[in-house]
Length: 189
Image (cartoon, rainbow, N blue to C red; front, top):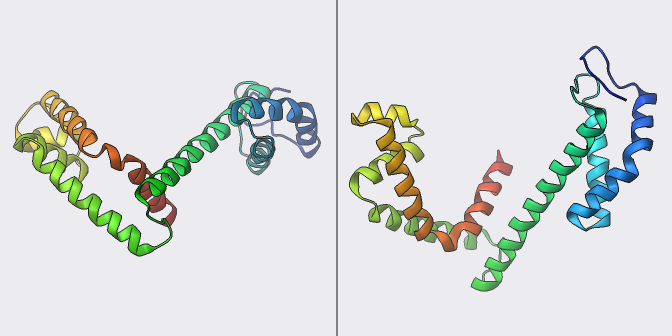
């Protein structure tokens, strides 16, 4: 069953047919990626649920089968990335002996992280630090920074590369917690 234009939508009967025709193979595919039968079932169910939700507005240019496999792959990768973040956070918590529960612990980590970021920023050469701060804290584009500082965009790119390398090195031990903080901030929005 191929859908090539937005005029063709998946009917209820067509949806059931798709589900019956592809569920087992998609489930097996998800199992090979994530190696968890229960989660593979949830992933495939979620793909079909999203397809059902969007069935009236969805326009699939490729084959439906290819679309379903790509969707299962993407859902599986998202699940694995989420598991990696959870594992990194758990390992970090066990290494430092800190409980992830308390907001006081989160504030302490946040304060410690702020101090480390400030220290890492101080290690940057002046122009490099200025460019980094304009990019990351003022959300300016490289071109805007270049115009304000009367330098080339290439210089901005080089200085940002240098700044990011130094910051990554200085904050390497905090990367797992930074990921968790970023994800937590996204969930609060």
